[in-house]
Image (cartoon, rainbow, N blue to C red; front, side, top):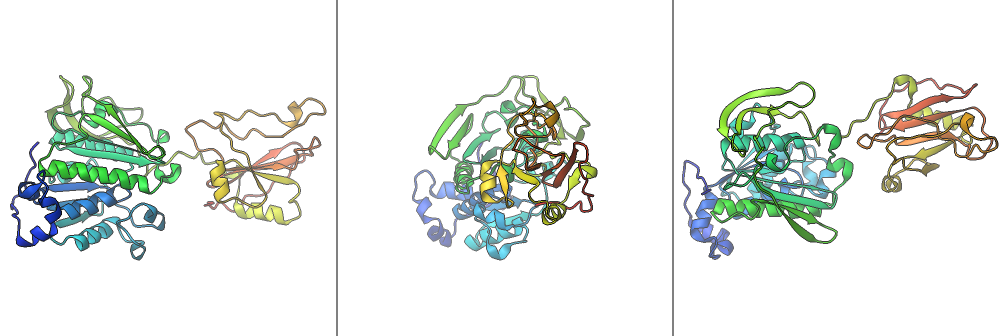
Length: 431
């Protein structure tokens, strides 16, 4: 693909020689490559950990027109990795913050912010206005939507992701390369994906991957061969190593998932176009209805009658019954180390289901550790954060009550004759 140009062709001016001089002297760039950069347009979807270095470096190299799309605002937790923002911009729309940073870096370029979410209704109109599309999101449904629109519009898609200590990057739908659906045909259900907020991410990792995306976009825009077409590059921060996996077009790829997943499907009219498979056609944009950052792992909300608020638990501890219960924190040990309630004991529940015995099931004289059955914990579901048990690690155990709290409060279960019941008067969330 030769880089497309905007309607008003830009030429090199005298000030550009000083600004872009360090790359103008490169034989691979030169005046021709720089003019290509100035006349290219790039849409960056996502102004977070990946989008930050992408936008800054593309502004620096002189991409003539950039669009930055994101519907979120700057939060304190973003600054660990989203270096395009700052403390002074907390609460500001990310697009406004990103555009401001890019304009401060280079006033020679045009940079537009779109404080909205990419949807199946606006994707075609927005993407059609740019030469190169960059996926810098952490949302699965947006990833598939970007791919489908880029296939329809014959736009190259430079896509990447980063989570924990790992990253990956590939360029799809460019010069005969496969599309995203060739490699990942169908979007996973929401319960099967996580976000950086849930799994964590080392801030440097999206910075590294974002720089690789910026480099790839620069090469495509300048008219140089792309590096990540036909391959999926994996980065491991622990070993500081890269692994290349060859990918190719799928004979079965149709670009769009024509067969709906379980549940209703929302579809929108599109155009018919040949795609990756020999007999494939794109007929409509579809909303995969599966997301990552928007919809984290599902937490099954308990019945109000089985929940105990944090305040009620504090009241329970303050009325002289603190010796009657033991608080067991079932979160991962690292989260327990970061923050835990007083007197809690770390005991992570990591089995697919919780199968335990009660006092009545114990052999005579061997009550052991009493763990009541709370509810099954599927591998893809959020586990309860804590159990409150009687101080009954010892063999003798009177009738007791036990409590479990998840992200929205405590669960209270009556256990045995005479177990008391604490009324649930506060349904507030626990954060």
